[in-house]
Structure formats: C-alpha cells, structure tokens
Length: 148
Image (cartoon, rainbow, N blue to C red; front, side, top):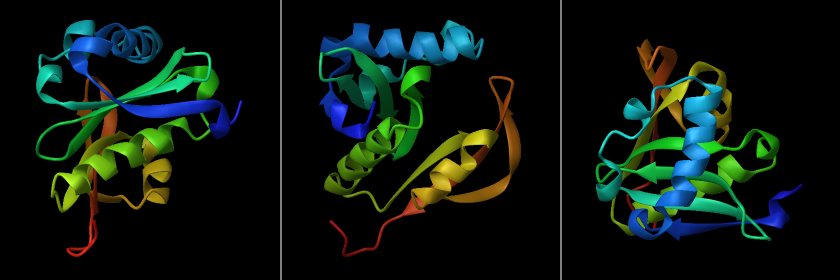
C-alpha cells in the first residue's frame, strides 16, 4: 500500500455521510472507545470534509474543517496508517483553508500524533488537556499572508 494507490477528494456531508461515518466509527468509536455522541457532535453539516479512497473505491480516511479553520475528526483506518493518507487529508484541508482566505488552521492533536503534525508545520500551544478522555495538545499552523 502506498500513497499512489489512494485518492483524496473534497467530500459532501450529505452525499458521503455513509463513508465518513464508516471510517470515523471504526477509528474513534471502536478502536478508541469514544462514544458515538461525542464523535458525531452535530457540527458536520457545517464543516468542509475530505475523504481518502483506495483505487477500488473503498473509504480509508476522512477529516473535516470547521469554518474557523479548526481541523478535526482526522481518521485513517489502521491498515492504511503510515502510508501518507493522513498527510494527504490534512494537506487537502489546508488547501481548502487557503482558498477560503484563512490565515491559519488549528487542531487538537492526541499526544502520540504531535510529531506527525509537527512534520506538517504545526506548532504546539499551551499545556496538554483531556478531550474525550484522551490527552491532547492544541496545535496551529499559520500561513504567510501572501501565500495562496
């Protein structure tokens, strides 16, 4: 499995709900034991979503961005981790943020994922905190003012 064997596209919550739900339920609810009502918080219809698919059309990853640039619900199926899927999802949302005129994006990273986000240009801010019973750090990536 490599980055060449998958594709990332902008998704629609209404049209792609089943794919998004499948990936997030598998990663957050089943693997990490996050209650479904915490994961599906009612904000999804207002968010921009991206989905990663295999060449055969199977959903393997998803992420969302709120209007203020808050990235979240970044989920990649276990067998596809460390194959560039997460990076491609985050980069796709960063491109959307820039196109929409935002000057930064931010996220709450699980502690184990901090190095991954640092490689993508994010920097930690403040102390660790608990979210859904899991330790996180807030991380921000700012864009140059003239960057498109």
